[in-house]
Image (cartoon, rainbow, N blue to C red; front, side, top):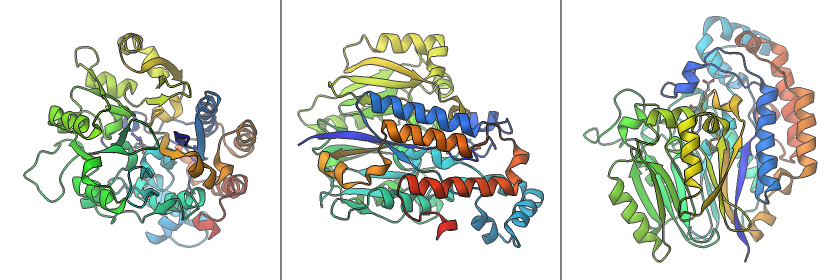
Length: 445
Ligand code: SUG
């Protein structure tokens, strides 16, 4: 049986902009109100997808969402024509308005948590869209994320889709950004690591004091129940509250795993040794490589700035692992030196490849944020919607689609332009035909 890990990257939407919406995410705040380039952003993303496809990886595309979100604005009391809703909201509630324009669904590591069939009791792949309750602009995503995932993984025999967890901070869930799966082979049973920022129902436990802990322990537990996992293949670890307070708003900003590798910063977790021992014990005979980066080599601040850990560790078809890093890592002397030494250490990671995803990085989204991983078998791959899989043809179609519909530059003032809404809906309508998704957006339903 052939099995592998597929990556489904978020296609950047036509309203990609810098609105400073994510308190606790250093890049989002420091680039607030800069002008963005939706076209460049989408093309940078497509280049990465195509490069992984060319390396022999299974690569898919996850469609963006409809923005500005007129339906959200109407729910908040704005009325009249779409143009009037936009104008009134921009004037009377500019921050709410900007939140409703965000293209944040591009970071598909936050779209859902996915458990592969090797881990689940019914041997199906389970999906739970993340509710993303901590940030209003992101809380607008889960229903449409669920619609899109169902349109992609549309075979009940192989795929189980759950509703997102209750829209409440107690069950704050940021999806796969805080989830890593270890395994010896992608198709077999693995160990799923659920990382959380705080306990929602126990205020006596440690928690950050400056920035929010978005993801709760109780949310992790709920997902393990929904996904029919068992105690032998679950490990929970808490993020170190001090690193959340330094801008590590998701665990994938400070740790990344793949198969038998966990690449992490020494300050990433609380009770680190206990967690690592449990992972090794549950992995049985498969020897884990725990690659720890010391503060003396790379500080937490440098990790947040360069996204050294927001890299993708992937297994190439010939079996060796490569690390997909943002060019920010190459531009930082110490981080670059670290990565050069990493590939010469005695670990499965043998190669680094750098990608320019700067448009996304300026909002705090690196290569790993841009992708949702799904470990699967060949049979499961054949059961999913084939039109979302990257190919020469799809790459060229999507590039032309971006050229046709996306603006080269976007600033805050442009967001209220009713024409942008029309452009965005026209583009998405065409995209649902290209990817054969059916009707997944509110404006289509
Ligand atoms: O949720 N940024 C996103 C970045 C998400 C990164 N994802 C992972 N680490 N997996 C966030 O903070 C900024 C939007 C703005 O400010 O315009 C934003 O939503």
